Length: 251
Image (cartoon, rainbow, N blue to C red; front, top):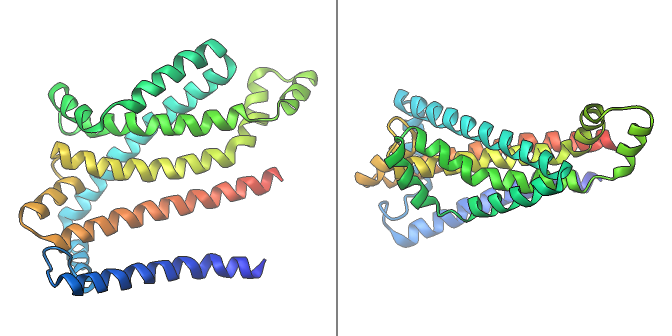
């Protein structure tokens, strides 16, 4: 048990070190800060970003849009999952809609949304359309895989459907829901940055990436990518921890 805990700490650190070493070697090999900036240049660019007020405004705007998009995605996915589990006919219709939404080409959707809406709304809508099917699959799978005996026993004891759902079924899938939330927020954030690049959304991380590309500020681009990766890793780590705690409560 102690060895596993130790490995859980050491392996991520070794992985990060290996990535940095590989990055340094490739940077020296290319010998071009424009193609692949060194770790030190990227660190300098990151420090410069952290001292720039515009960076924080852009980061907060992107995070806010990401959370709004995720809220729509999660609410839709959760509601549709419950409907699919409770009603077979609804499941057939919803699964078809989910398949169509999943198959939509992201870039084409962004371009169409820019015609129909604007650069602020388009990224929110497109991230919702991409993330929602993934969340639906996870939540629906968890609800469908529940052992029906617990629910039936509660009904025999006089519990109504709402009580069964909130006191029996929902706690049993809470671990999966936490995982879905963590991975969903992380994916939504990364997609939001990409959508902002395509939509050229002002005062956003995507816009900052665009500007860095135009002026060949590759180190700044890498620094922005590092920020996005760190946010995603932290969010997933927090919700994975919550998922494990929920799993322990079930046991």
